[in-house]
Length: 130
Length: 130
Length: 130
Length: 130
Image: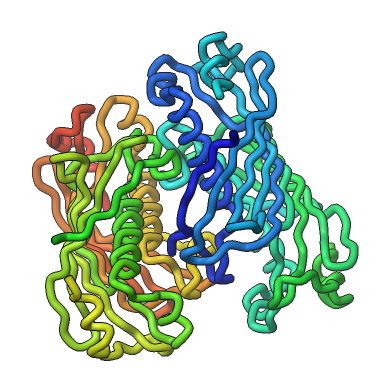
């Protein structure tokens, strides 16, 4: 099952066009990824204290339809694949049956010097645990 | 010549990792696009009052290296092509000789109902004026 | 009973100091005020469509202790008084028993020209309904 | 002479009301304070590396008139007084002759445990250097 994260559009998310400011869809996806990690038992603060962190390396974003103030949105996060230091997700932001935004996301684990670091078997198991 | 836009990283742009929060690179690109339009004589507020607006339809983002507080960055905006209601840009954020972020950006002109609207010859001329 | 609004600190809320960026506490208060209005049956989008809106006129903010990534916070919103076009709130952001932020907030109802507009008896009744 | 900081309102600063989102005036003030410190020769990154930092303790904000997309604003930062670990500023955001926002700001120097730390004579001299 695809994990989903729910949110409501706040004043701060919109711009003068009346819709959600485009970069804020990336914030919504990031909230959903943090929630995904938390649910899988991955503690980002503990990783950070150990000197490693997940960072976004690539994000191919499609802005399909706009969201408005007070819209109730859901972010679905599909795990696609993992290899070495990286894994791939596909995220979809919807309002009811309408897809508003999709993104193919490449996340990389890096060490304190910013170099890719192989994802340990334990971390890999947590990330892919159903 | 490629137009460039200069900015300094502020407190608000960073997150607890110590680097710029990933979605904020899209804000930097948007500031550079607004500046690009202004320099070309395209008045976004006037367009908006006429019921049309430029919106981002797709943005393929590569996060190559992180920026830090007080870094001085430049955003280069290369016009690539235009057809019908859309045009393509390639944007690059650099710190000195280092490329930190690139994005292929598809922008679409929409009407008040959100439907694509052909870019007029006058607007096209302004956008591509060297 | 004082209405409360719960939130979790996201990546985007922090800055490179490791704590929540100070201006973001105002966002948290605004989310809580929007929630307060929604719970009381006040539809901000409908008001906006009628050409009136609630705006913050004054906010006296005390930053008492910092919040961190993933902290679970609550925002309490106390109604204090109302007169003419304005009402006063006192908002408190807490993490468990610790108070992190307080603000005395003056909100004004304005019309489409930005002038104060007397709060109608119906709206006043909704705002103060227990 | 009061130092001033200039900025232009970007898309990201506005909300669906058509005006600048209220919390963003605090961001503008913070950019102006960082600029003030930089001009006075105070290196916030170096202070942070030494385990001390300036934080906002109180900010009494008056929202007097709204700013719009593409407005050119100036932020004036007046030094008021200093004692022990804290200093007081008065900041004013203007558009031409119009005052849009004012704030009385109390800033405190804290150590790595968040406790107030007396401002050294050298730092005090830099802060008050005309």
